[in-house]
Amino acid sequence: MPRSDAALRPLKPSDLAFKFRAGVPCLLLVETLGEWTGRRYERVRSGAMWMAWLRRMKLPVPGLPIGDDDLSDMRSLRDAVYHTAESVRASRLPPVDAIAQINAWACRAPPPRLLDGSGMALEPPAHVANAHVLALLAQDAIALFSSEARDRIKICASPTCPVLFLDRSRRGDRLWCSSTCGARLASARYRQRFLPALSDSV
Ligand SMILES: [Zn+2]
Image 1 (cartoon, rainbow, N blue to C red):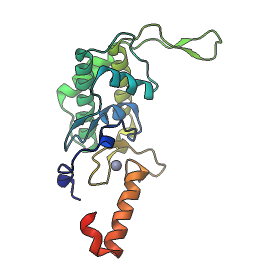
Image 2 (cartoon, rainbow, N blue to C red):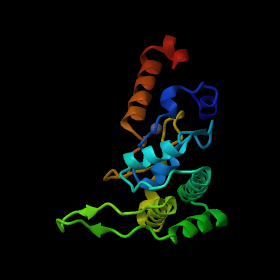
Image 3 (cartoon, rainbow, N blue to C red):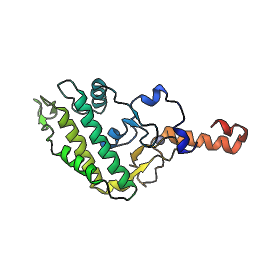
Image 4 (cartoon, helix red, strand yellow):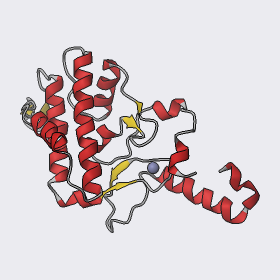
């Protein structure tokens, strides 16, 4: 199925579930919006869902309820990280306002890392604001884009899965965001090769 036809496929409940294929926190944040170049569906549709995503990521969870402004801040940072990652991947200069947005969030100091009573583990921070969590994600983005790992930012080779991911393979030859996409493409190729009569249903 060509990339443009993916937009015609109706959304399934599994499309809206959180996915964790991008390999690094800032790109996992980007992945909370489905198909940036297609249907652009939101996977974080409430404050409770944002907190659930942070828990799954093992990131600090804000103490106060998440409001619309907090979600809007998250989406602004996510947008900036996406446009920067996509520009870096395509060897283009990122938009100026995207860089400014990431830098501004990175300046919002995240909570300090504290030792717990055992002296061997971290104590959960007493108070975390949404801005602190966004600062952590912005700093993760800066660490990625300013390192050689930026050359490993890729887009999944599956025509129906425009996910940006960090290729952590030793040889840097990974094509798919996940083994699921690799297996799906391999089985589609198999059917096209050996069962041409079924190729219309791929
Ligand atoms: Zn994929």
